[in-house]
View 1 (cartoon, rainbow, N blue to C red):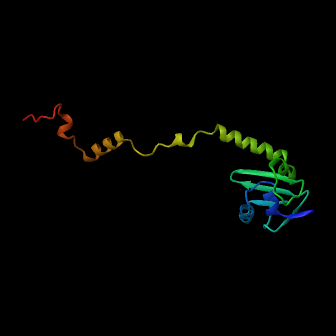
View 2: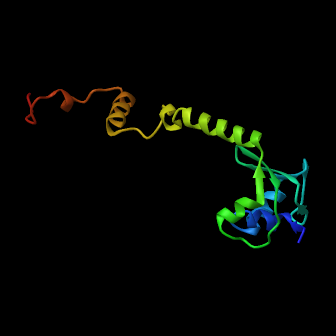
View 3: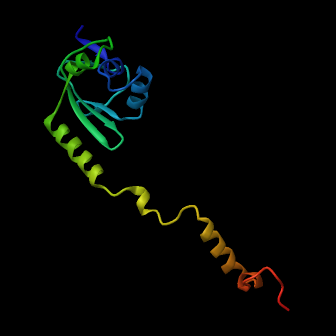
Length: 141
């Protein structure tokens, strides 16, 4: 076997969990073979260069072997060789994500606390109730 459909190869090489997921990503234009966007039925052969985009991560791999069977991960890793530039860019992106600030810390808005709600209600009403000023529940007249 010297040629295989790209969706089958991506599934066998463990880039995607199912063939249908591989086909969807190919249809969305996230997979290129030798610099050209392809369809799921496109056949790949040994020596082809694939560009795979998954979110912000872009991988460039060279096809080293063809298999239509999905085997264990160590066997699947033998089907391709990732380029040095791709490995370096993924490492740089991982380092940038690690050093980036936590997105939740930048939130200034959120669900108000009970104290915030009370302060807001007090400000909205524009008045201070008499019972807030009394020290006792008894009525002083």
